[in-house]
Image (cartoon, rainbow, N blue to C red; front, top):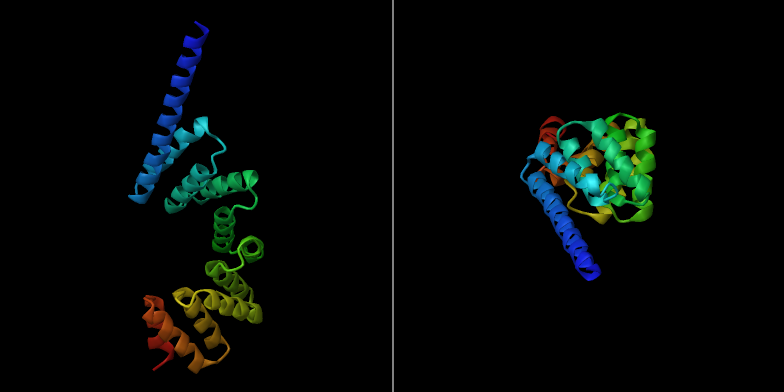
Length: 199
């Protein structure tokens, strides 16, 4: 009888975890298809029994972000960081959140953390550069744009924003070279900048 009960518990547990895995996989599939509301529902269902699952918390936050529910997104990213303060993606997302809120000092703190964890993240250098750019700290902005490009010579945004900074510094010829490179990498904004500044 005891063995039968143990077997029943094992079968039930296996079934429960199998169902949970199906729910989180469904959430990922819905997210990838752009069905963000349904993805949030699937992740929320999964998190009822796995409240500290970092992947589901983060992905639900991204789904909220796509739905422009930024406070909910921020709350999920913070939940991830409460579990794992060194989570690269959550730190990067929080940096972007504060950048979009125009709190550049807070944004820089999170981009600093990403760079501390992974010193070759081109996107983190580019975003930290943008934050310094917005604060008017042009030397630091340029340094970060340069680092971003050093780590990824195909980062269209880094070339675009470095070009914009060079325009502000009246380095037009060099700015136009950056806009040309960014445009060649597919940036429509760079094409507009070329038309405006590089005739």
